[in-house]
Image (cartoon, rainbow, N blue to C red):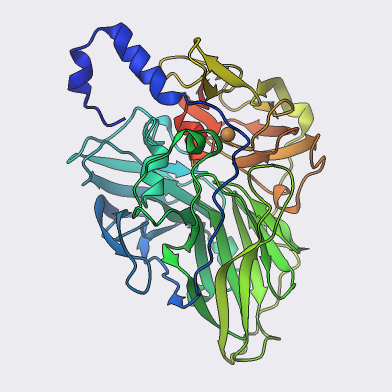
Length: 484
Ligand code: C2O
Ligand code: CU
Ligand code: CU
């Protein structure tokens, strides 16, 4: 809602609360299917965001016009002078991140550092926003393992809208230990953020009631803000960092050649050892790092990164589509050898857990007698002034997300750190290869119950956990947890 606070202050509190809760609810029709993907010709060179040093960064969020390729111009939002998306922030583990952020938009915004363990004041809490024309200094020590994290806005009830219109970027953490592995680097280390958009109305964000229920889907799948992208590659091994930065769409990533990926990393960095996988299913917010070896592809050949059909939900997954074309353009030899071990992933022992909490995420809540429905966690929707869960700093807990009774997919995400996935019962009844490492977002299909284990950070403060379907999040499928 973009109604200025001043307007509300003229109204009695009761109508304020009513107006707020009405904005979160919608009439339900879960039988609706996601908008189908319409493939473009793959002829626009893939954009790769510039890299900035996270020790000393400054950037502004601004609106402007973006060329998505071949003169396809839309109004979009971007960070740091980029017409859409933002620069890739790079920093080493244990360094101090410092960024002066200015808000050049006409609406309040903030930045959340998705996957990073940062103090509550730096985390982009939904009501902790920077006013239009204002600025904020983000500063925190980078404590995470080397890996692929990302940043995006997180203002209450406007995250979906701002992310949809273009605000997001990569945050890459490195370390000397990681660099010593000799993984493909520089131009051979390519971040890929995959996002579906509706281009018929530019990038305007106008969800209808069905969009608010199942999430906002677009017919055009962009990679790094490029529509119909093509990347020229050499006959050697590349490292790709896959990020599903979509509001609601799931991708089942695979190669059209039928070759397998070497999966090397997940949300929270490198795996203990590489794993060969034919496909990788990522829901909004999730990441995977893969190596692709093009050395046995003839120069001149083409192949695609694509999404295969998948089962588990009625709303999406029936369609397979291409995402990015690789054009093998030149002969090159690397002397890369795949390390047998990458970086140790120490399992958190279940015996260390001091508490187990279970959350019902499969329940739609009725809003009064109005027939309106809201996505909820344990029958509650977001309220910034409530303490929903209280945990002790530094302790280990097991949390369970129970979608047994649900009819929709919910990628569940916790702020303030990384967890490990313990089990999945119902539905797929298994853990996936990319759930073997550190995670911050985990997908629960309808019928599934997913258990995670987490060690909370040593600091205190209030954080959120929520569904990363951004329409669900903005609709209130988000609760607080306080570390004390
Ligand atoms: Cu990427 Cu609270 O979100
Ligand atoms: Cu997050
Ligand atoms: Cu959800």
